[in-house]
Length: 379
Image (cartoon, rainbow, N blue to C red; front, side, top):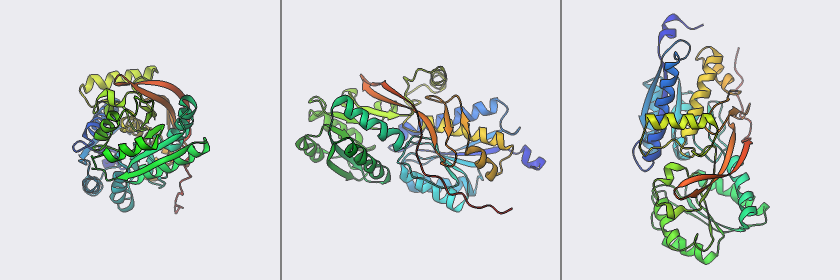
């Protein structure tokens, strides 16, 4: 039972978002989502009869800054939960001060490479089993593509994702004709595009990220790759990323995410309209940049707190392990017990004239992540 003083104190939610730096165009949207959901929770009376306070920090698309802000949220602000991070390297930077040192619940909202397994971490975006596994066979079947080139940023997400791509391509009778890794700030891709052209690749499966992705797509377009019938694939691309490149450079690009703005279910439509009214401008509510994962992460956490009836971390984690929400962007979302990842509705979409059109509704797909080893608790 919580004391009267604790019962009256506000519940603090820490959110780390890239509001400046190369990912600011998506980080600003994530910050907006956090404000929107926290305001909605308070409008409904808060949680446990207490107001919910958002403590929002800018990680500036810099992992060292993210780590410092994470340490502040836990050590100085004493937040009850931390959300945020886009790059997987940023998740790792946040994990140290929040989870390892701070022993605080951390919810990571981004699509990523999977394999994160910690009792204090829950992931609310899609993983390779939900993106690569359905998309690659579909693409090979629909387009006849057999040969793949993998231009990549050099960090954990592209390397782990590409390993999965290679397995799935090989299982479908295809082959990898090139695989390269570049620093995140690399911007000259002329040599790589020449190699792609020489290889005769049917598909470019891209994991280059901002700021390099814009010059890469420009160079690839100028080479005539897509005009010759080449297929462009980028699983993280969403409407915010479409805003940062000329539409013609990514015309025909295929992606696979848990949510696109074209998803027709009534709740997704209503949510998008509400967001657009509150936050008009270029920072759109999307799937790939963590907006959808952040929305459902906040809602699932709130549901878990309500079920637990307290903020006792052990009880909240136990409730979060089987939490589900019937209404979320893209459709219902349910935590797979023991895995700390979500079963999600997934969609294959194609960029056409600067927007994404859904070409295949894949339905609900399990994350197929390993079971998280939970510590044996005394008492």
